[in-house]
Amino acid sequence: MPMSAILSALADENRREILAVLKQGRISSGELARAVGMTPPALSYHLKKLKEAELIYETRQKNFIFYELDLTVLDEAILWLDELRGGEFHEAEAPLRRGGADDAAEPDSGAGGAALSP
Image (cartoon, rainbow, N blue to C red):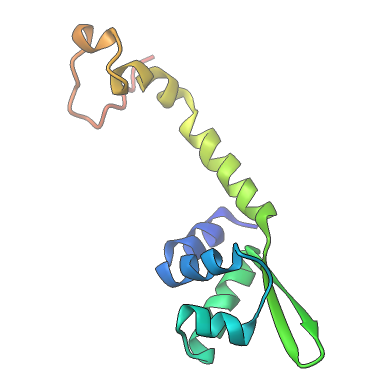
């Protein structure tokens, strides 16, 4: 799944609310609509985006559709963000951001703290 689809899905407050409700467990679409206070068409739109990002999945039983979280993709996104955060600049800047001993020796250049020299 492209990271852009995952981040786009997570960027919307309504979709984050849906995910928070789904955190409690499997729920039917009708119960989910009531829990988040959305009309069925609005909920359907947001569920489509969450399914496209593979953050949720649906199962059908007779005339009901149930939704559940799929934490696999979320775990992948967290790992990617952690790698991004733990990259070369993160390690180089760690003493500066945490008030380490290097604070007095190297003043902030005002460029967002990202040093480009090796």
